[in-house]
Length: 152
Image (cartoon, rainbow, N blue to C red; front, side, top):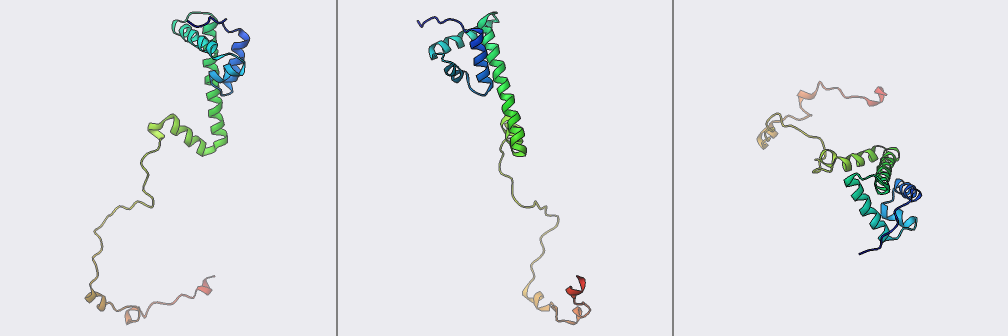
């Protein structure tokens, strides 16, 4: 069986919570203040047991302080994403928080959507094309040419 370590002091709890609040996880916070891994593991086990049983004491205090600090770190990170990331940051955040609603979906088709409202135009046969008088016929004599310089 492992060594029985002293419980965390109030100062150690405050220091751990401060580091976790900055975005570090529990393990990094313990390393940062010199808590060896076996001691950190024991504190974690006892803090989780105290939270499950709601047994008052230093381990419940540790659990609550770290849980609160972790939530604060998350809020700070979200604020940074929204403040510094602008619209793309907000889009990224929504995709991560609500993937079912805002997550990546199948790619959308590009270009305008067109709804066919009539049958396609019939093809012109070569016989009909020969019957087309074209712009040199008398039917086009009434068309006036536009002088684009006059319009300016």
